[in-house]
Length: 386
Image 1 (cartoon, helix red, strand yellow):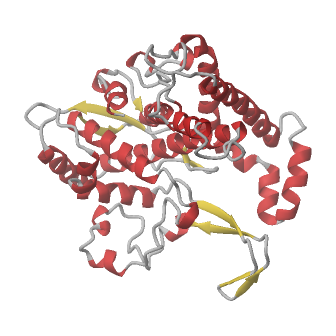
Image 2 (cartoon, one colour):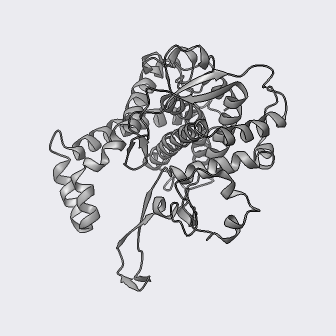
Image 3 (tube, one colour):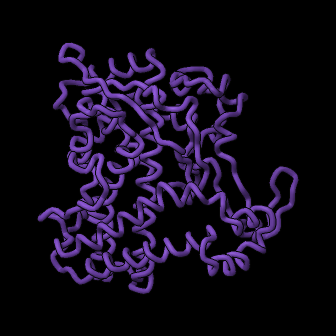
């Protein structure tokens, strides 16, 4: 993880143009989760590809994937980047999804019709999902036939467990493996990228937060002292508060849905089995009852010792969801964000570009996204300030 972060953030201050930080963070997050999920280095965060297309993606000799598979990887990543940055932002244009919000029983019949009509958003979603699924099936099949694969990445662990008969092959079918692996890639790239970008954007506009954050990061040790997992958990309390507050201001999944498995009463309303229940996490995170001055960026509100934190309802802030269907990548994502921020702020300060709109325009889809990206300018910190 550290090597990808260092590679992606080289020489940021040497750029004569604005840094579209949201693009940089997406490439970084995709590389990190690609290695963790597939055992493949997609090469997106390498310096030569920082501002180029993804046509130059190459697989390192130490990667499990062979060099002959680089075209498949390139095509897959192109599809993934499109799905993450464009298609997911266009979900509001899917008529079947809009209809499903109003009359859930009609969503699937209309989707089956609309996905066959070229040009509709349902057709685009179906087309892209098929392409992604096909590419992913190819990657999984190659890895299943590779007897020299490692055991460090998620895909290898699943395949090794399947072959060792530790779990039933009927449970870990090739289709299930493809689906759960891509779920990790999507969830671990789009959401982490958005959160990382929103944090840097907010800190750049609040010098008092930046000053306090830099003091904590600089106080940890020299620039080459890489924090361990335990360090990230114990030694950076203010960084933790900054991340939580940024996630509250820009909650990456403002809506989550659940289907009732049985008849249940909620708030005096009797909901029959099969009812879709939508929980507005974004609304909860801006409730002034739990968060006074909700539009104000105030990391101290997450200080465990402050009265606001003590009096707050425990479910007022649940960016990763809660219960058995909460995000399984929560700890991994937070660790990646913390490592990235520590590395970035050891070397750079960030300021808003005059070419960026204010306030930022957002796109609403499965996950929140920045319509025009987060444009920043990086200033290299002097040795004295480091």
